[in-house]
Length: 416
Image (cartoon, rainbow, N blue to C red):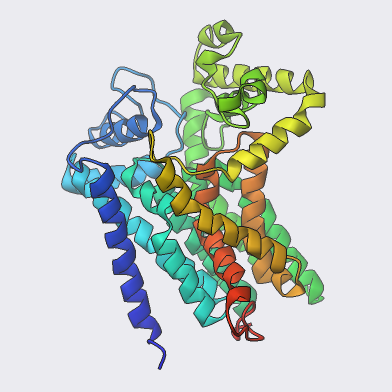
């Protein structure tokens, strides 16, 4: 007799939480906040949250200007926690574990809308034990908030495709809008999912602009207040953050093209030529514009090399996760089985027509956003692992041909 779904969800929630908490205890001193250079991602995120709570505004240190360099979704979430419990690193780690566990549960809910119950539960288990995602709970980085928002948004979008209840798109827009405030590359979801919804209407010979309008308005309603704030602070329209230039230039230069340890990856702009132009910038907006210009100039003058660089970026995207110095054996053992399952899905299932329904197109759109981000900027394994909900469904379906019996609804479940 199959375990009731509500019992499975509770076990998944608690199991995923304790796995993550165990990883945190194994890798971190839970009483210590991020340390290191003030330019480090985790240090800046934590400082931004603390300064928000202390009334200094969105700035890294009280003596620095207001900033838009970091997307605000994660610092705002962390600031909400600090406002309740104070500057308490253990509470932050517990929050990250809870968010990670919620991401696993939402991944299961998403999966059961698309695949059979058995495959959906397998996807949930994979999400819980996938160490690259569990490791995120040990870091003060934006993926902790991004993954559950992504899973929730995709789940609601898929449910809309099945039920046509337009209120679901309002929820999906809000969730994916906050995901965009957390990782600006998620802005790609707006045109991609609108395209899926429009194609679904076209194939059914329907014209339904209201759902698409609701999705777009709810999506933008989350982002536009921050965009307006950026206009007030910087005097320019900045949708989310001003770090696109440094990411683009850092991912398109001679070092990531020719040096083995950097191939397809990213290097800080302090290691690149013409840094004097950046240092001479009057503010972070001007600095961002200069870095975009330098990166675009490099691309224009290296067009013949771009196919090779894009190949490096794509390969780096699928490379081993980073758990800090050393631990290579753990990186291989925790990731290689999943990579094989991703490959099995691509080879055995991706080309089947069952995997190209509107529901599946929403998943593929999420992966297309990841690929686009990697090919424009850099091949960062974190970009890949932040797409946990989709990857775990791919992995679960990739395992299906290895089972003794594959039901007719194993790819597209009975809730179609």
